[in-house]
Image (cartoon, rainbow, N blue to C red; front, side, top):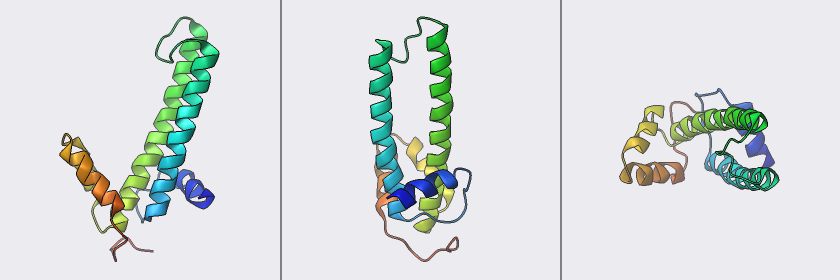
Length: 122
């Protein structure tokens, strides 16, 4: 679990190679839990939702949170590319998520597929 999460952050800009199911799903689960806890903690400390800006301190906190969100998004995007490569699909298959409902379901299926011999292999 920790190895998969460490690999997630170490390969933040690596869009080539492969990522097995565990290297995709462990970071997804961990980021979901950590994100929920951080949002709940910050909102309870501030006393209002993160989207509501009441003063300059809130604005800087909102800016910092957007930088963190961008970094997590970039790392997630790269692991999605590597996971697609592991199932012997091009990274361009990520665009299937743009198709409403069916695209998200199809992408989930792609993320659940087992490893296949592929051209990006180790």
